[in-house]
Length: 178
Image (cartoon, rainbow, N blue to C red; front, side, top):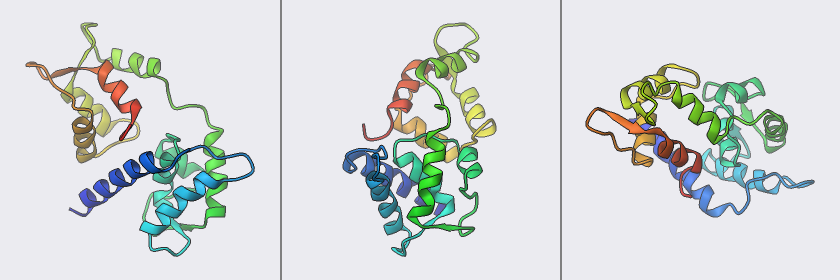
């Protein structure tokens, strides 16, 4: 139940940021936008001027980046809550390191990836197979996270349990609240 509450809070925070933070890029010489996001996370984290290391990945995603959690952890993020706390000045080097990493993928990259699961070449993938890939390979998601993604993207299965992956990719890349 606590995990579900955290997912809902995270989704609401991401939606709030998408609607209220005017620009997500770090301005040259400033850091104003990243600071706004940091302040929002600090607000939800107890207003002590610190953000938990386990939330660094979410914070970076709210700035418009899309790093895998493994990448965030390799630059200083943490896997466990309470392991480390960060001041804003400590977040900036992590943010800057992640921005220098290559992009995580384009629409064409994702289409190619999904085509490997499209046995008949018709633009469909089995919902069960996609769920398996998302929960067991790469940056693993929980079943509840996959359910939330499927609900958000309004993914409709056909009578055989398949769905068109092109529309799914477009909706996921568009992001929440946009």
